[in-house]
Length: 125
Image (cartoon, rainbow, N blue to C red; front, side, top):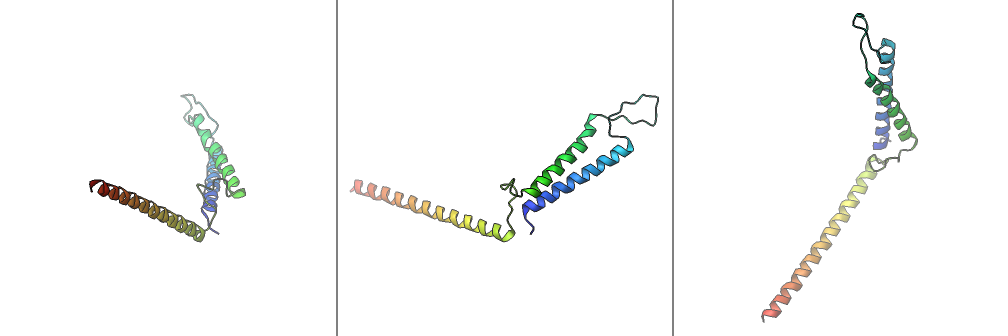
C-alpha cells in the first residue's frame, strides 16, 4: 500500500542513510573531525565545526524515519496514512458538504433579501 505516510518514511530513511554514508566517507578521508592546519603542511585541509551537521542530520533523519515507520499516524495531518481511493472519497465528501453549506447560505441570503424588499414595499404603500 503506497500512502503518503509510507512515502515520507521511505524518504526520511533514505536521506538519513545517505547522509550517514557521506559521513563515513568524510571520516575515512580525514575531513570530519575539525582540524586546523599549519600553513606549512600542504596535505592538510582546514575543516570547521559545521562538518558535524552532516552526521547529526543523518542520525536525526534516520531516527525520524524509523519513528514514522513504527507510528505512521505520527503526523497524520501532513502525511495521511490512507490509500488513494479513501483520500478521494474523503475529498468528495468534504466537497459535497461545502456545496451544501454554500447552498444553504445562499438560500438564507435570498430569503433575507426577500423579507427586506417585502418590508420596503409595504412601507411605501
